[in-house]
Amino acid sequence: MSSRIVCIIGHPVLHSRSPLIHKHWLSVYGIGGDYVLEDVPPANIDTFLDSLRKSRYVGGNVTVPYKELAFRKVAQADTVAKALGAVNTLWLEEQRLCGGNTDVYGFLTQLDQSQPDWPLRAKTALIIGAGGVARAAIHALIERKIQNIIVVNRTLERAEDLAKHFEKRAVPADFADLPKHLPNADLLVNATALGMKGQPSLDIDLALLKKGAVIYDLVYVPLETKLLANARALDFATVDGLGMLLHQAVPAFERWFGVRPEVTPKLRELVVADLEKDAAR
Ligand code: NAP
Image 1 (cartoon, rainbow, N blue to C red):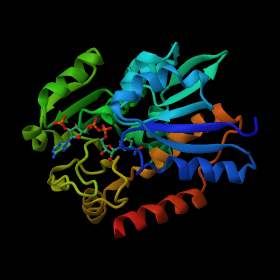
Image 2: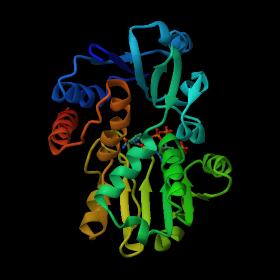
Image 3: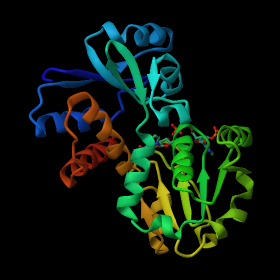
């Protein structure tokens, strides 16, 4: 198992914290492998994925904008990747390129650990956003049998497409109707880029939100978004986006290196320190 090399494939990819996470685990578990960045421009991505089997890599992560393409390229996909039509983890089995998706696992593990009783309280979930991460969140909530899932998005067609993808188990809604849905939401998920460094914040009137609701912001740069700060000030339970990032890495590391790694406070501190450096830039 030693000297296995894994990469993260994206464009751009420099911002990724995955090398920090996986290199930390390689060091903690005394494994002699490596985890490197592969910034692959769109013109080269087909060739890159087609030749991965013959490269120095034993697998990789896939990030924006290639998760859907990677799904189409693999010879075999796991159940979650098939349900999402997106792959974030690649590995080789008998020289065949295989793909899986660990985002749903990351989303749920972080939520379960931060708010252990959330599924008992959650009848209605309100997802804001209809991109790749929203897709993973909706799949996770359907898996947990949440009764009502409402997807609000700036571009309504994308929310409608997601609802179609999930056979209408999620209901699309217009961004302008957000205030109407807040009083019924037990779980509010921000799956948009709003609140990210360099983006406007997600400004919603939390006074309208159902009492006792959980607010889960998937943005993690910065870690404390305005949405989370406002929610805490109003005594709502909150979950930040960093845990999802850390937990989605666990099954991938295990697959490549044969050890199930732990998400420890030390790992979190390491990544938080790196995020803070970024925020100060
Ligand atoms: P994506 O596929 O590009 O989707 C972006 C979403 O944000 C779309 O719903 C888009 O709406 C919405 N959006 C962007 N700018 C907006 C604006 N100005 N006003 C309203 N809506 C806006 O991206 P993604 O991969 O789903 O990622 C979304 C965010 O989730 C990222 O920014 C990242 O912070 C976070 N994320 C976190 C994790 C984690 O592990 N915690 C993992 C992946 C992503 P339209 O459809 O109208 O464009």
